[in-house]
Image: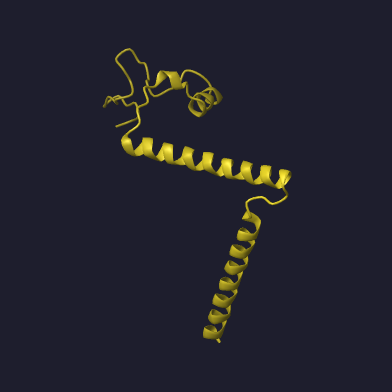
Length: 111
């Protein structure tokens, strides 16, 4: 039983009457402490899977930024770039064509 009663003893109240379920500060203080934890109070150890995921994400982000930087640098120096714009335009147009053909097939099947 959770509520205080004369017949039962709940597990929140101690013998001296202290209710351990209450937070002694404001709700905003609790929200702040939960939203911004003090990370030095924790002992964080990655598993192999977690470390691999972290490494993969960092490597991908670093690679993406490197390619973007090289592309911008080449465009500014020689005007050519890596040709990513043409590749992305072809990929986007192909995606639009596939989507349009799929939608027309669906429309024919519905009618």
